[in-house]
Image 1 (cartoon, rainbow, N blue to C red):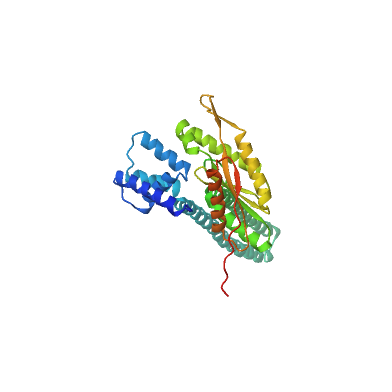
Image 2 (image 1 turned 60 degrees about the horizontal axis):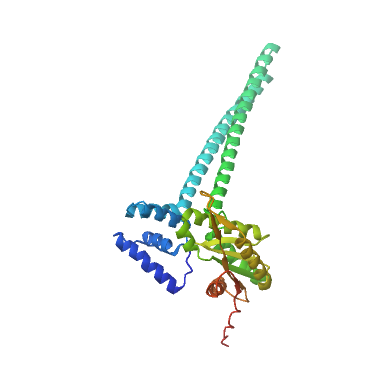
Length: 351
């Protein structure tokens, strides 16, 4: 997981994380620190939900439980290693089966060829029709045996092909899972980082516009605290679905972390991006939240949005920083609005 918090924010989250570690008398290892840092920053709803359930249930957050949660929810490298290990095992088993079958058929084919050659010689030297008939029947039986063994090899090859197809499907499923946010079903931070970098480079090379939207749900923490995580998850899913339905083509909506989302808009200038952002904001505000368990109406939610267009030679981190700054200006100006980022300052060039 990547972290782009400001120095001040990171310091606050780090101090709170250490507070939990000290309180629980836990070892400040990197994995345990990361778990509590992510919990305090609210970057991952699954981590927040899991820890809140354990705390409210009165369960002690032991070192073993912290490591288990980190491995299950944050350690994508470990999950990838498990998938890779399974893949390697299947590939090795399939190759071994095919190689063994091929070697056996090769040996038997050589034996059949020798037998057929001997029979052919005997057939040429046959003294009467009875001998010729017996040798011919033997040759036919030998040929049938070779055909049956070749069919057996074909069956094993088909089975291996089926295993390889299954393997491809499983790997595609693992890849998709690794790139999808488990709660909302849209692209996760990992896919955003990869695709955003690629799209920015492409925009620079082709000289086409690209705009980034940074989106934050207004007062989400209060909403979550008042109505519970299940309703909070419902809100996150609603926003994600609205973003997904509201964009098209190569546009990339993604969950950036916690209640923060982003949308990458290739080939889109700032003016068009602001118009789209307002449409998305209004679409979310138009939907009333209901508690599915009770049917009670809980009101509406709003979003604040910061928009920034890529400039010549601008880095991905600089574009994110400008869009994020515009987002916080939108929140500071009263929320539920879209603010466009200012153009970056011209960098001095030393000749």
